[in-house]
Length: 148
Image (spheres, rainbow, N blue to C red):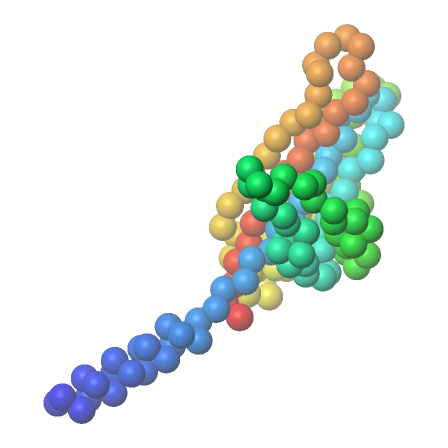
């Protein structure tokens, strides 16, 4: 009996040590620029970056600025799916919103079939919101995880 419990504990420990999780962020950027002049996309990186390569620590003794080059941070390999803008010349376009929902749902379902689990969704809007405002985006980040 003791051997069985010991063997079970060793097996569980091995599974816990080998269980690694990876995360992936997918971002939708949907234009809320009047007259359909903006661009809307669903974007996901096809490569990984180590944030430590672009991070500096500031202290009282050493407050030199971060010297990371922007071109080193940029990702060249990414997937970009076209989405429709929220507005056209006639105003808000509900058909475009429904079309974007269908495309985003397709992406989520595809990732789910690949073993990804949708964990969090967070959204934000950037717009002045006054009569002179000609800019604006609606951004949503979808955060997925899966076991490696």
